[in-house]
Image (cartoon, rainbow, N blue to C red; front, side, top):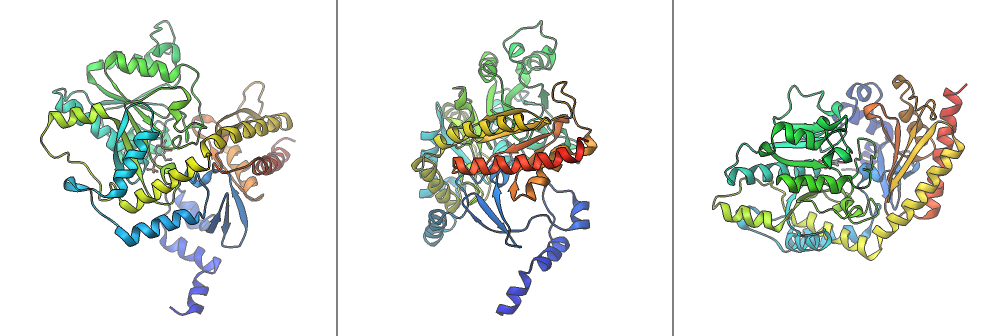
Length: 462
Ligand code: PMP
């Protein structure tokens, strides 16, 4: 290719035209894309910043899709991938084969995860991890001679991914509007009904609780409960003290498997290595992805307690007919190992906790400054602030105003990338910067967000 051609095809307007013609974007309003072309086209990233094709530099205040935990452009990561690609770019783990990288990563995960979650099954992302977790637990109950034990209970406002089972488990309704039918056997409970989960039948919402559903359906039909330790896409919903423990005890009482979806929370995002560590709860299975490589490669895993694997192995001589071509991809695993080394060496989990406290202070300051803001919350560097037409009475903005979206657009014009979360009638702005942020970065983010909220207030409060 001649240099002139390469230069021309990188011209922003030309890229926009090609994008519109040829790129079917994920999780995007297709009509808007066809009318206006793509939004940001980024070309570079370094630390907490990304640069677009017009050379504008932005703070990435949500780590892309809450996944670029160690920040962009790390040489060591590129070097790990290069070295592994030169040594062994790919190797299958089917038919009992293995490679040195996947073995080392499995061991590392066993060390980092709580309790006896010591065995890893690898995937290429979060949806595949949850899908695998569902299949593993259903397979288990089938081998146990309990094939009717298939139901999976998830929470309203949960997000578990977009493959068939993961979408069916997802409790954000918008995600299954596009499909004509969900996979059978997925049920949804109201989140955070701690007293109900502890068995208080006098509570008005009892029937909508996990316990209420288990009792109605019959525990002998329930395979597993899945929940995010802190709900991400559904609004950064942090469970009240005692909730996860109550669910753990409920699962133990009925012999139901507890699956923690740590796809966002895992690897330091919430100020602990895993979200469940905030409450010292150990699930039976744990889905991870995103932060396992900080987005440098596609990788996910399901962690299982070793007894579960042992029982599965004992109960059948057959092939476990579930695996992805890229399960245990050696280059992805090498990149994952380097990422975990960076997280540990740079004490990023601790930084997440400390900077999360700074972020909360910043959000509290915004609540002082802006009458439309309320309900600030953080767990490490996973946080949100909500917008209300009248915060004292809890009156929401008219949905047609797209309040959170407007504030996020104002942030964009101030070179700060944030994310609106507007499911279930909420208008929240999510903040989840890379775990490498410092106090100055947080101050800049809060400053820009404050300017954005001010501009929004000027528009809507007359
Ligand atoms: N679970 C959770 C909690 C998630 O936030 C996501 C992605 N946002 C997924 C699962 C799905 O992961 P992936 O997009 O990698 O399939």
